[in-house]
Amino acid sequence: MKSIITIICLLVLQVSFAGTIVVGPSEVISSLRKAIDKANDGDTILLQKGVYKEGNIVITKSIRLIGVGQPVLDGENKNEILTLAGSSILVKGIQFANAGYSAMNDYAAIKIIDASHVIVENNTITNAYFAIHVANTSYSIIRNNTIKGTPKTEQTTGNGIHLWKCNNMLIRDNHIEGHRDGIYFEFVTHSIIKSNLSTKNIRYGLHFMFSHNDTYVGNTFLDNGAGVAVMYSHDVLMLQNSFDKNWGPSAYGILLKEISNSRIVQNTFHQNTVGIMMEGTSRIDVQMNSFTANGWSMKVQASCDDNSFHHNNFQGNTFDVATNGTMMLNHFYSNYWDKYEGYDLNKDGVGDVSYHPVSMYAMVIEQNPNSLVLLRSFMVSLLDKAEKAIPSLTPENLVDEKPYMKPFQL
Image: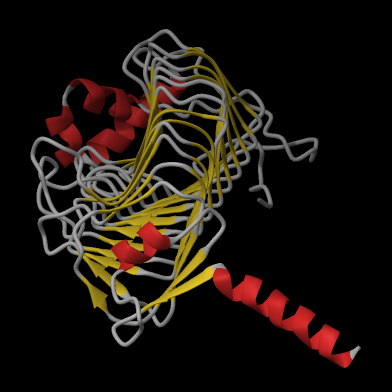
């Protein structure tokens, strides 16, 4: 009986070991490419510590590629490194370095194409043109990767995590730094961007184009060239993100252009040139956000309509709201404005007189930016006081009729 049990155990162990291939400088198999050729669907390849220079390696089988001791795949500044095309592929715990550059093609350290159910996690990618480039892929996860580029110019630097024509993707807990756009979405639907740090990128921390029914939540966009851009999209939820120190002549916390039916909720905008810049937007619900120490909290262009702004805190901003027209088709109500100088006789917490968040000086700057040199001058203060008493240049209907006396606890 004991011998039968022993034989069964040996068979089980043999089956288990048959699914694992170990690759390393001192192992029987020292080439990752050979290991992949040898592997079958469902196998695991353990890549031991070492530096591997094998050109572009292509995986089309459903396998798990796991690094042990942070092995390095080196593209030698001339090759793509790893291409995944298939389903149920895992890549984990590997350092990717020195992927090649091409002016004609989007070279990437990791390229995922025509794939599904792929997981790329816990990797480090340095000095790549595009770090992770994903196309025509669905139901996949990119998480907990550290990506650091070598920024040059917008034309010669690729994106950190680039997705084109994908759906049902999860991008979370990544650190992306030093690329053109930290995260780029184009024709991506029903996907989530969560808890990423995107910083010091040349252009945008996040760039949305033609991407619908997506959510980004809990991300930090810090010190990027122009902040975040969401363009030509609808049904986007922007929740609990931090837009911080996106500072420069054309920088924003968020640039919204031609988007509709979306929500901006519980975000913080701190020390941006413009917190939110809106052009051609419709039916955007902006609520429970905090705007502090920005140049402009918001610029709402005259091309915007039917947007709602309510229950937000505006504190310490140079300008609360600016616009470029006298017609306002949006709704401001129940916000806290630290510049509000009204009163509350019945003590219900709501000011008894309405608040006009657009100053005359903000209107003048929209027409003549050079007049910004007069900021904080006595004459400007005097003109703003006169404008509030008898509005003539500012949009008469851009008004918060129920301003709150105290900030909200957000």
